[in-house]
Image: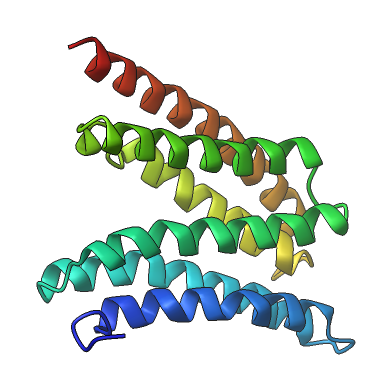
Length: 185
């Protein structure tokens, strides 16, 4: 990988991908700290999603590679965590299918729009960013699971993952509408 591609934002994105198996391994460790470590690692990795984009813009280190890799890292991280949560019966498979299915559908839509010469027509929107925030927080809570300082983490995580699924559908329909509008023009 060239030096230009190996900048700080891209290193953070690659670290996020590298953290995926660590989250799964930590979660499955037969120790008292394994699951809290998995939740914390997932949360920290989630925060790097914001940080790498911020740094890429601030340091003028945006790249086509980073623009490609960042959403891939997010999708891999969320899909892996959702599979673990479904396996543990901490979220319903329908929720996982909504979230993962939307990610695949919108990725395909973006690819199709890029080939149609309209790559910016399905750019990330506020609703998409809000959806991502709800997903990352809810997944972190569901990985942690145990009450914390009297806060019912399980209940809060389930509430937020359901809201994330709703926002996932809303954002998908928003992007589909934007694509249809662009194609009609």
